Length: 77
Image (tube, rainbow, N blue to C red; front, side, top):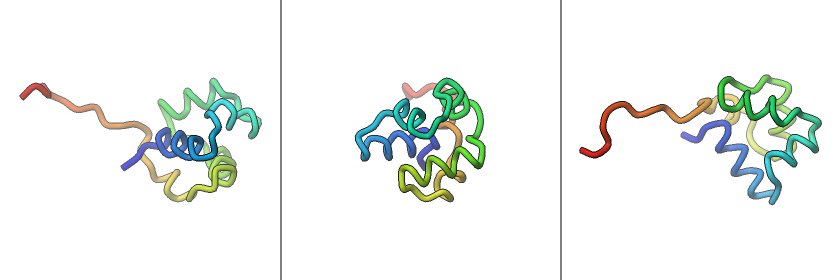
């Protein structure tokens, strides 16, 4: 399952814009956005703005995990 950040980043790529441009167009503080998307969920108002702007499903966005789970153990086998 894709994270919120991955969903937004992929949708921005399809529109050929950066996440910084997204924030600028929607009057969202970019540094606050970066912090929110890494550590916590986006608030509902921001999620709605982004989903409408990028034409993505709001339910996919709000139900996505915040970040990729950290794998425990040694990946070397």
